[in-house]
Image (cartoon, rainbow, N blue to C red):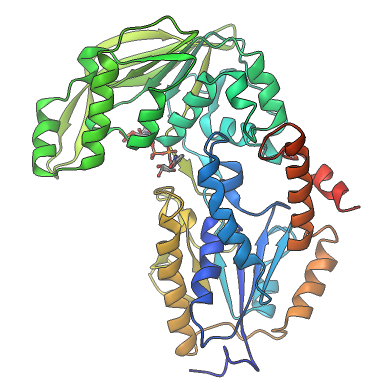
Length: 464
Ligand code: NAP
């Protein structure tokens, strides 16, 4: 091994993006006890934790407990957090090459996929991920407006994000008021007139992307009945055969819940949540510039030559009335300045986390992990093994002498540069003050925290 990584000459790593993949990069590096490493963790927001803060649903507080482990990593003496510092704006690739041996991009998938159907630009047609970011208090979404005076809402897609959105729309004010949901969202949802929520899956119950705990929760809502049309809850013959050949406990559990919901009697709760299957929106219908409904094509299931189970239109159509539409068909990665990007996959071009060019040649010193490496799949913990793989490649490359040759590989030089470029950078100690202030505000209202949703308010706590 080169002497980089020794106590006298620590390996210097910059991580771009302080979400789960960024933190699991740190914890994986810390497992290499013989390696001396100095890590700087950057995020464009003043707050760390990425989608654990801005994506995980406010009524799923337990899922946020991973931040305790992340905090332990951030508090290590060889780790620094630089929040409110944006790669491509405050720091360029050349700056990082001058101060670090290796750079890893863990910037996630910040936008979403669209449906590609007419009418999507109509008022009242939104991305579910925008709604999620809004109710979770992401500063970029604090000014978004959602017309919750509508009685009927359609959510396209049946993944876990769709489940989260459906739950938040169906929960009572009292249930939401116990969470760390953003105050602006709590106020808007208090006035909500939503009565009917439709979740629309283009394939059948056996292909639903949600997981059993999430579908189970829908059946336990205090304020909403849940129902599934009996004919759509039935598993078709092709899917039954597929399941017989490829048994899957989660799919079986999902089908069990769906079957049970299809047999439930509507009890007359304030709201009703209907799960639909085998329907694809083909057009968002408008009235005077605003969403009025969705044209739905009825689908059937078929198996491709490769054995995939796909939907295809039967020719039968219907119109679903809805004043608000959320598309929830997956997050989408965006290109990172000066880093090769695979537009089709929406990921940084990489092999096992090593950034590669179009010819598949690894680019020295550049790495990636998390959703921007593999696409928006898996749960929070999936990022642990994802980061582990990349860190293993980083350590291998270091041993082979493949890394940047920085001119100023030291902590103070990088910190001075960051301070010069972004005087309002936020350290981990600063974040702890913001965190403490949010928790203190929450205690008064018996909530986990009350989030700051404006960067200026976060900085004001720090006396900036
Ligand atoms: P997802 O799991 O990929 O689900 C996307 C859904 O959209 C699928 O039902 C998909 O159907 C459907 N879809 C895609 N294109 C469509 C189209 N053109 N028309 C109609 N439907 C379409 O994505 P996600 O819900 O955004 O979740 C992202 C990741 O975060 C997932 O891994 C999820 O499990 C995770 N997550 C986890 C939790 C949790 O653990 N509680 C919470 C939120 C998110 P097809 O299957 O037919 O493509």
